[in-house]
Image (tube, rainbow, N blue to C red; front, side, top):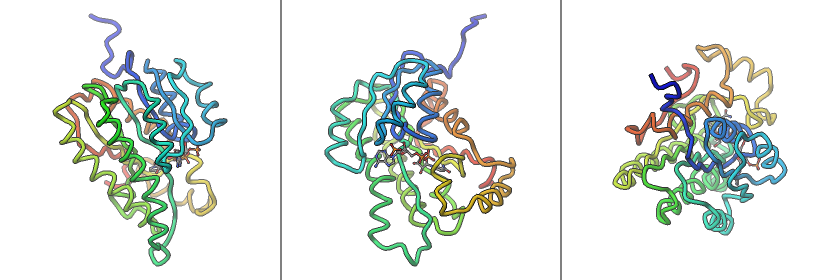
Length: 250
Ligand SMILES: NC(=O)c1ccc[n+]([C@@H]2O[C@H](COP(=O)([O-])OP(=O)(O)OC[C@H]3O[C@@H](n4cnc5c(N)ncnc54)[C@H](OP(=O)(O)O)[C@@H]3O)[C@@H](O)[C@H]2O)c1
């Protein structure tokens, strides 16, 4: 029997990870490199991006500092990309804001980073044929886009719901070139994003009890899902939103 059989291996693949300077993106970049991929990492903060680079198992093929809400930065990033076998579009933000305060400006702010940025990147990577035949794209959405998981997340949730919608159309439209597009919808994951003070630590601890598996997610829980979606193990899967949430939305 073949001893090194591993359909989840990313050996030989080049994968872009945006938002790789923190949280889920950082863990995903590290995990992909441990599975044999060569990663290209993006973030806004050069120092934090360097911290990620220093933890990779295989040296990065690119360390691209870019603000994905800037049209020029996105153009520059795309011009610097090598041919890709995969991409995990993780850069994003959240806000806790009751809908009565959800002005058009607040929606624009959230949609700029959570929707327009990954969608423009996806569009350009496909149009410019940076995504190779057989490439796999993973969009990091959220259960906030599929459920009203916590009050005050309507603005955030709408941006992620819109992302999931585009994901499905892209999956259909890109399939002739065998480019797959899926998303992951995580429940609450323990990253700097959720410890910004808008929700107190006590509220977070209380909320975690609502998860059937008894805890919030760890970045590795999401990174492992991304590895599956990037790997040849999922080669017949496209247009799917993979919920990873400890059973919260069951
Ligand atoms: N944590 C959760 O509970 C949770 C749940 C569901 C979905 N998600 C989603 O998962 C993704 C990652 O979140 P996280 O929890 O890992 O958060 P995080 O630790 O705060 O990391 C966010 C990442 O996005 C990058 N980023 C933000 N704005 C950017 C911009 N304008 N241009 C380029 N990069 C930008 C940040 O870069 P810099 O640090 O360099 O600025 C950072 O690398 C987000 O899309 C988030 O909505 C998170």
